[in-house]
Length: 162
Image (tube, rainbow, N blue to C red; front, side, top):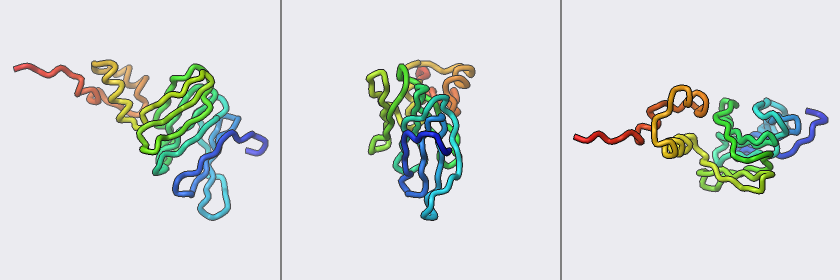
């Protein structure tokens, strides 16, 4: 958007898409496939300036961070958010995927760098290990926005004894 500061950019690994983080809380998408950039979409999920962007190695995920304290993972094939995470106390300023694609690092105003699992399956596993129990339907709806089912914690159920 003209007149809105761009705070970060990321180019998808196939060099066909550029994402631009803006001070107005939006992520603007630009196609690069024709040699000339043209706007193709907008990702909206943050409530304050978007300060960092990173694509995963195959370009299917985009991680965005913001002064609103959220890390959002976007499915780039549907351009929809997959999950939202909070852990910093205040604004987040930077984000990067690890080279093996297993983790996401974020850096915040709280003087911390946090490491996050990069796949939703890892999030399910970590949550189940922490809870050591099944989640209620209400908890699934509130905390597992990517569609976890109670069966995700099946490995945490007690083993029956004969």
